[in-house]
Image (tube, rainbow, N blue to C red; front, side, top):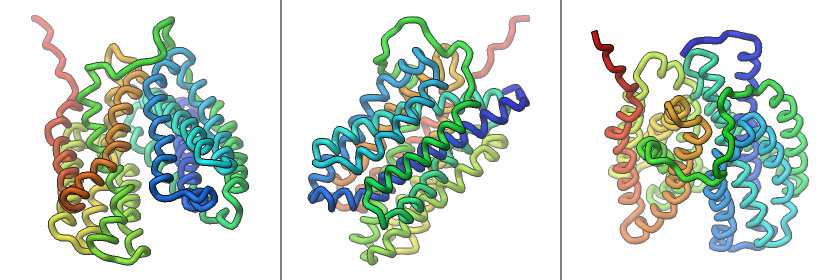
Length: 387
């Protein structure tokens, strides 16, 4: 990379950091009020699961078109528009009078969330290129930090009904978005003439997609099953069980803050391989020796291990020859999100037939494949020029 140290590049870096922060904060504000929405609509656990599927369907549907939209309008425009639309959908989730309307709102929420994700990562790739050194992991760290502050905001505004909370969150988000989008950059050669908006991942992206899939299934397993493992297997109380995901989230954020420093010193392929090994061992530890201490250490190891894998993968695909950053990121994200969304239900099925300890062991094996697939991040050796 060649550094382009200009005021506009520095402004763009802060703008993209803010956009990642906003994306995480809006998502966390929704997550914080799911129990209240469930109570308001009198949904059973099963009914809530079906309603929440609306986000997953929206995410996967939009990812097949996100690269096409960016190719048509550019990542700057798509980032700005989808950020505003994502914020505006939030109050609709609080106002939904029935599960059907909520499912529809969540479909839109997931669609805007994932399209914004692709576009802002395309911006991040370009800003990283102009900056001249690795900063992709820092962008993703700001998503995690945004999620933390969004959760705090959700807790602080829990005294209000969800619809009031969401209106306040939307107002704050839109102000921040309007401030942040102006310094975003126009990416040269990003727009394409013609072509279908609907796009499936190209074969050249499948191996990188497998890397994202393995990392994402680790994230998904921690999000959905860490507290359940501590409650049902280790038999802790609910308050203590929350420490499992907290341990994962803390090391995930720290890992992303350190990721760029590590990337500047070690090969990306080596980092993915070592991160995969650390995460796999982290899952095997509580699976083989279930206790509160081993679980907290293990879940923390998973967070540290997978923290920088997806940022590294997006940085790699964003600089591939012959594939635009947005199309590459959308393709890899489509495969990766499949792991995040489909992984936890599969874990549940395995746990139903065997046990949750066995299910975590299976996830550890999947994550362990990073020892082999991580080689895909090796830089291609240049052919020696003929003498």
